Length: 244
Image (cartoon, rainbow, N blue to C red; front, top):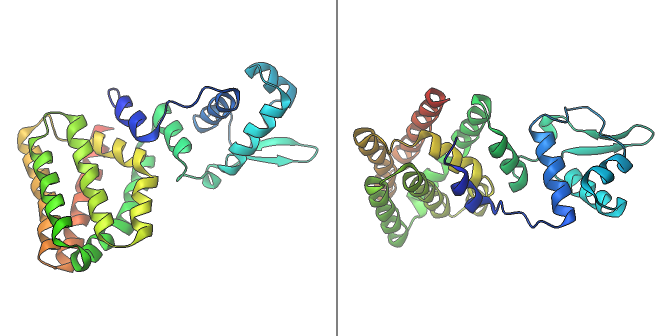
């Protein structure tokens, strides 16, 4: 996913404040997500970790609390601090997503993302078909123009993401809108991988697929909006599979 780093850093505020606490959280968190500390393994002793990062035990303990809150660690008496199973990790945490992106992700990650999107976004599009006002629909059409005219992958991925956020917001459901914000990094990386910007013909086709979502919303056609959104997600998933 070379070339995607600037886009993701902008979305995730990946320029982590380089204080001692942040350095420990970032260093240990990335090591866990990327498999350098395996699930179920016990971390080195506190003294060893404090020495490795050049921090006090107090700073280390606070960093451990932060990683525990993200679902990565659990402290066991007489055992030590263990890495929790992947199923317990908070995939809606911005740092956890960033560490996945920076370490490289495989097909399973994006398959899981697509399944989650299929469970949420078509219904959001259906809600938007009943709730979107004229201003929201006009904004979506302007974003379609950005997709059609995008000169590169970065521009297309950004416009693609913007349109999906606009649909989520137009659903009128605060939780659906928040979900897309929470997983912004994963969505941006997904759109980057599935971007057809190097192929003008495919770019036109993909933009037309998204236009069907918007026009179904404008027509207040709930089934058509849901079906069009579902189609866009499935086609994007298949392009990602080929890219990987």
